[in-house]
Length: 109
Image (cartoon, rainbow, N blue to C red):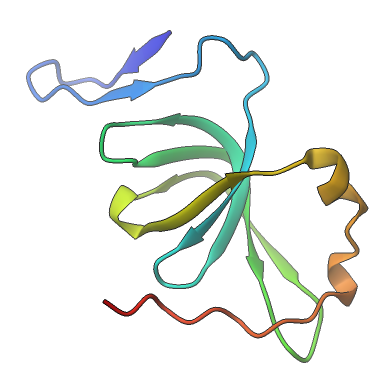
């Protein structure tokens, strides 16, 4: 199935995975060092990503991982550094409150 946005002249097409009813949960690391987790709903030719039920995981060396709810969220393709599928079963067993890590730095070109 393909979802096209309003303006037909300036066609913006997002490709939705037709073979999966339950779409993948993904983790995205952005060029500015953020980690965003959510359900991948679609993307376009410039890798703009549509995520649903998303949240940002904010890392700290002094306290556990904070999860900031974002909801329906679009990540611009030029800000995507890494994207990977998450094993939801493994992810649900993580105790994020006890994970400590330095936040990632921004990508330097």
